[in-house]
Image: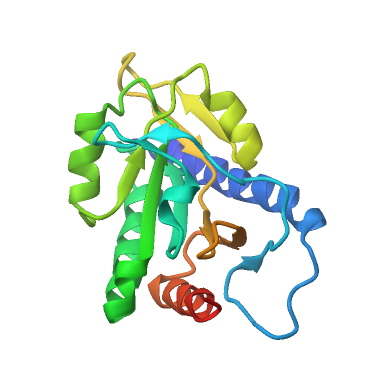
Length: 206
């Protein structure tokens, strides 16, 4: 990648992050006076409420499957060079930092690249971070509507060959409490400890 292309890619990711933040911040409910989170508190939000998608093992999944656990959802793609692996590594590290409570953190990866991210590829990708994490597949036809409901943005960036394209996409993660309610938006780069601390607080709520 040339210096110019690398700079453009960084600028696109920066713009996408700002775009998502701009969409969320005006709609943020009042933060709780009792609990302070590292992530953005979006308790009561009317978006990112649920999904009904197959995982990498072929099982259909919804948020109801994970009651009693804190769910962290990240949108990305397996050929992502930087943001996605960094985010998944942090998610796996947060699970480790939680000790025994790590069993109650469910990591979920939703692909924005249905063309290349087959169940087999996503299974290998999840196994490289944490075998307990799930990767969900959405069809190319259904992806725009899902992105709208979750207020995430994505854009295909053509490469030198038809299959060497990249995907610009939102870089944060949604966090759900043990009742399946969306509670937090964790910014990209917040770190594993910050995520682990937020998960622990949500688990303590019961």
